[in-house]
Image (tube, rainbow, N blue to C red; front, side):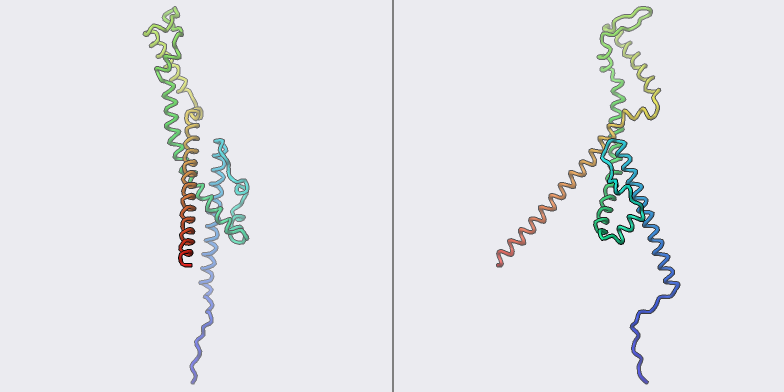
Length: 221
């Protein structure tokens, strides 16, 4: 009785397994589309923020993409590697954007507070009120006399306080807007300079390695 040869042909997977694999693949595809849509929404939000603050906007071509279009480029496009690198760059830029928002917020708080305090600087108010008239009973008198100058400063203080308290929430932006913008830009510029320095160092190391390799070849030849 002969021995049967082993059957090395791949066995068909059970229908239950195939069905599970297909469902899992469909789930992954749906999750990836959700992530791409989230990325594009975040990018559009960043673009709107930058335009509102007079900063450079995003790539218009990117803003017009749909999640399915981007997925198709990643899977079937002849330029899928370039698209993948661009996608990585977009994610990195979004990370920088959110880190820059934090620095912008911190600078806005500091600068806005300074501006509000400057509104109530007694020395500045004293210089501004020099030579003005102060009402004492029915008489207007020059504020050059120190007690009258102090009264004038106090009245101006009360007036400015009332104006400040009467402001709407949106009106307070004028104290903080420029500080926020400067803090945001400073973070991006600092990171850009650090990235350029890293790139220069990497190029120098690679060049040094090439020169060493070339020198070793010359010695052995």
